[in-house]
Picture (cartoon, rainbow, N blue to C red):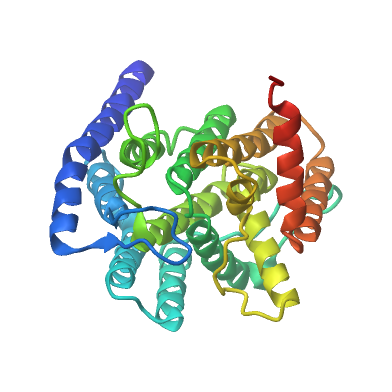
Length: 362
């Protein structure tokens, strides 16, 4: 029975991957014909217009295939409604540009959908510091709403290199899947592989590799906003101590880099007396490009760091590391990252020094 279930899971994931490979080229051609492209200029590094339909292909396919695989609509419709809202608003923003207020309002509305009818919330953070359980009580709803909006923005802000946002999504959901598997709970063994598969299909067109010198499609604001919402949905459903299957500190380590980077950028911009959401090229992934690394090397290095941080949280809990040690280590890392990020040149100089040291001598 279990083998049959796993075979069906693999089948749905394979179908999702192939569906993206089939649909994406048609969507790319249609986007070019309609002018739905990202035009080079300003802080953008690409040299020619790139279609922005990645998210508009993979996430509708996920919703369709996830439903056909047996996902209960009465449980997932709030997620689907939030996804469609962000896909619509993001697509309009990609095409015409929207005011930050409208986008922020859409993010809040999507957060409300998954927190209230979707019942995605965090009521307890478990025994983070040992001793008593860290319950949120009346802060449950505010914390859950704020966390969702911050995650949506965190993923959106990290969408800056070919393969980065899609690769980040694959790693995060794969780590969720690993943690779920280690916990012995198989409730999400079907939907997470489908989600990973559509992102892998997108990466075939978005990540630079042997057969593709540069991205032929971007995920777009529509896709990055929706990806952030999906991450928030699974993080809260899986990581709430009162009903989830993953320790909250594990979720914190899996999401460490997006959280670290967003907090650091907000702190730096406030220190510089700028709006926290004002754009610039000093995010964590920009440090590697500014230090002279290629796009491929920069993306690969950032994803490797995400993988290492995630494994600390997943395997640390699995092998019995004390929760307070994991908690205080996480806190120290975010404080160090914020302190270093206040002057981005510190990271750039460190990366240059490391790459110079690691480069083989002639």
